[in-house]
Structure formats: structure tokens, C-alpha cells
Image (cartoon, rainbow, N blue to C red; front, side):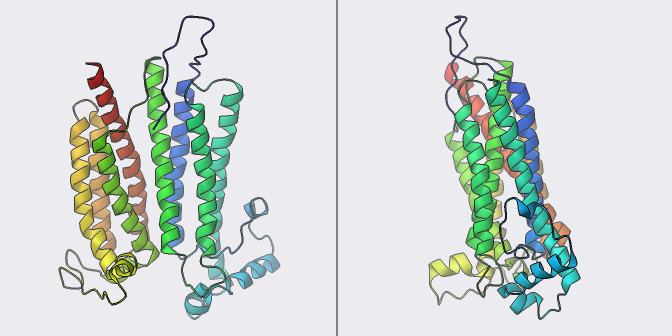
Length: 359
């Protein structure tokens, strides 16, 4: 996951740059915290059906909301052309005031994305010019910047799936790509910050490798997060409001008449059920990785345990509360914190592997 770092040489001819790793650590962790916040706001945007309220992408002029009643009415008229308004919110009686509420959340979400881009790009340029980036990290930091740009493009690609069509929601496939890219970005920010923190402590420290067990756990959690994104995108959280049974049954009735693959990727009852029960496989995997690092990195282990414990409880509460807005948002927020915690534990596992290789 990282370029190798070479030990600093005492020779003046050495091209190794130690830079200012601690300054970069603080910067990356601030950006990571901003990503956690935007994931939470993205959850609010989805749960309040706000994602299609802005039907155009204006990178610069879109920074400001409508500033007059005429401008608001123009935005509302564009929204009224969407399938969401024609088939759902319009018949439900949405007026201009209600539209302003959903518009705010989509506008806020987009501006947070712009802010994250600036919060990463401007300091990166400064550190680059000042030669403050340690040897081996420029490519990785540039890759993270590119990922931020790609994430923004994915956001518009997602929204565009619900514009100019009869769909009442954005594509759940595009939504999952947008969310999972944010999680991958978050993990990359945390991992890079941890590598730089190790470098600040020891100028000869190497980046932590990605171990086999860590990849297995990450893959299992990826499936759970993907299922969660599909559940959100298909409004499948409303498929049942009881737990552990679903509508009084352990296994829901599923119609496979449209094919197994279609059912596995579209049926809200099956996806809801899979998200419930794959969670326990994810829990087992997370316990495994946490136990692997608890002796050497106890806080990473504790953080993983705390994050998945809270997330499971909030998931159950989301079902029993009939998808209460703030409980569901807290569930998604904890998912972001779990990803950050897992990145920490995976990095710790890599550090342990490095230490074992030196023994």
C-alpha cells in the first residue's frame, strides 16, 4: 500500500527527505475527520430524500444557494421535473418551503465535499513546495488527492442517475460506489497518517505492509458495507420493523422469478436479511483482527470492539424504530468510525508483521 522509505543518510548527497511528518499527520487526521462528517451528512441527505433536489452540477456557482425567491422557484421547477417529485414528493404535497429543507442538505453535502478538496489540495501544494513531504510519500498523497476528485465525480454520476428519468431514487449501485469510495479514502487517510507518525518517531521506519488477515477482514467488512449501501439505496430498511425475525419469520419469502443475480442485487427483503446476518460474520472477523493486535496496540483493539458493538446496537435500533432519522444517521456515522478503527487495527497488524520479520 505504500512506497518503501529508505533510511536517511548522513551524506550530503543523499536524496532522502525527512520532511515534517508530524505536521502532515495532523493535517491528514483533520481531513479524515471531515470525511467522517461528510459521510454522516450524506446519510442525512439520503434519509431525507434530498439527493435529487439539486439537478445540476456547477462547481463554482453552485457554492451559493439561491438568493432570491425567483431563483428558489427556478430550482424548484427543475426538481419538479424529476421522477421523485412526479411520483412521490409531489403527490405527497411538497411545496417550496419543504423543498428548501431538502435543498439545504444536498447543498451542504456538496459544499462539504468542496471544502474537503480544498483542505487537502492547498496544504498538499504548500508542503510540496516547502519540500516538507518525506521521501516516498508524494505519490501516495497525490493518489489521495485524485481519489477525492474521483469521489466528487462519482457523487454527480450518482445524482445524474435520477435526473431526466422516471426513477424516484438514485441508482443504488452508484450510491454504493460513492459511499464505499468515501470509506476507502478514509482508510487511506488514516493509514498514511499512521505511517507518517511512525516515521516521526523513527526516521528509518518503513510503511506498514497490508497483511493477509487484514485483507480478509477488510473484504468481509466490504461486503457488509456494500449490503448496507444497497439497503439504504433501495429503502430496504423499511422491509421489516421487527428483530431478530423479519415480519415474524426467520427467513423472509423471496421471489427468484427474475433470476438469482437480480434478486441478490435488487430484492429489498433479501438484502435486508443478508445485511442483518452477514453482520455477525463481520463481527467475528473484527474480533479476530482486534485480538491479533491487542497485546501490542491495545487502543486499536478497544476502538474496533467499541465501534462494531455500537454499530450493531444502532442497526437493531434503526429497525425497531422504523428507520428513525437520527438513529439511522448515527448507524452510518458509526460505520465511518468503524472503518477508521479497522484501518488502525490493520495498520497495527502490519507493524507487528514488520517487527516479526526483523526478529
